[in-house]
Image (cartoon, rainbow over all chains, first blue to last red; front, side, top):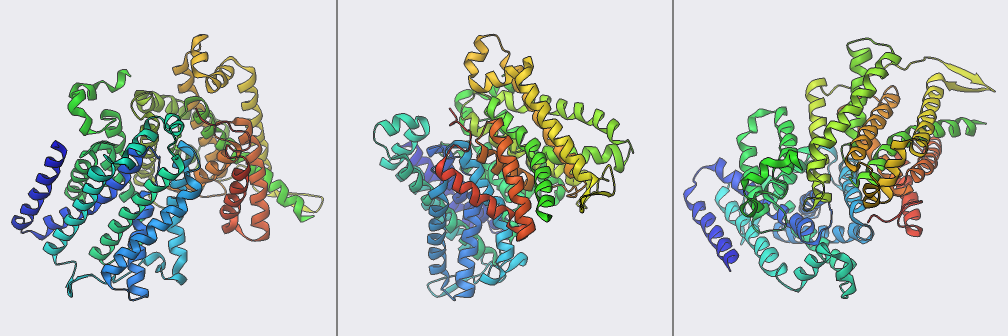
Length: 318
Length: 289
């Protein structure tokens, strides 16, 4: 139960901190951290627990932002309904990508999903006629509206608690409901020994599809929140920067163990805001960090406790 | 017949794709590593050639290649030693090697962007002008590319089947444990394979640079094409790559001729889907163990 305790005290600490922060820029950083937490937790479910080499995480994120934005701009759907419908749309998209993709093995899945990632920006730029807004993207996504009260981008405190709640629900659902439950047992078994799992009657395709769709759903909602919070979304959302950041969160944090990727998300969102002024060098630095992080702490900082820091220094002698 | 012209340009294109995709396939086949930085090495080759010739040093093609090829090979060997081998056989190593090569790809791209800037660079073709055969016009460059790509592919096939190192590479790709049991230095084979694959990527970059311009992110489109080719032929099978590169190259030429270049990828993916429906492992592939 120590994990539960860690989780609730973490949520409580952030809830209290929300009263004390007081500075808008700090709120902004933490709101981004909460949104990214959902994204990397969804990714961790696939990579760390089911062992699906998916690189389509930002596809779901972007699709969520676009679907939510397009629903409320083009079809005048109220913001909360747009968020939910957007998430469902992305879950369907995940199912659609997963149907052919998850029949493939290991590395093929990685290539397939990454191909989807690389193809999406040009589709979004070409899709002006269906309302994606071309290369300028969607402007003026209507802000969130709860109980008749509109929450604009500048209303940091409501956004802070809204995203905190969303992140807390996602983290709880994944690490304390799905993973220890029946689904999670099937997932981990597929990751550790696919043949053995199949021989015991685990339908690998079905469980992989479930995981893929669930991950798409939560990531899509994170994307929708991101779009509503910032009010703007452009095809740049699929650029190198966010992809590198998300990957760095996973590789620094460590896959398949709570709270690995969440620690990673915290370190990277805060670190990225500190480096905001470094310009083009920041992307290079992010790339260097990804390579170094994987080499020095291949399993993330979450696994350092058991292996010791000395292990990190011995990479060359492998 | 105009179709002959289209067919020949398709074969030339297919030959270059073959050189490029072969590197990706070799590394996957022997070392079981999916190298996401392959497209970036393509650009490294093109930038390297540009710096050595038109950009700064003004060397001619022969001298440029004798300098460039060993450098590319060395880059590959060093990178394999420094960032792939420490991860091999570790926990989740297939995942970590994929992520580290993806990180490397972004690192190289951004380094290129900072060093060379976002403007496209142009590498001059070796020969200008064109020749007329039976009423059809062919540029010398097309012939040169076709000739050198075919030469490289033939040399590669000879290398893989006739030399000690080539046999060792094929042995490792068939059965790693068995290869190491009969005294093959598996780590050395991994290093050389990686070096060879960087050379193939870089040389493909040099061959295509006069046609497509050189830009920091220009490697991703060829990488995607190489991916389709390799999956079509079967991951890890060099013979499969040989056939699929030419098939897809010719399909591409006809697609461009009939309906336009933007349709290349959709048609390729459709072809791929049809093939994968009947042979999920690709034309000649075996499932990865």
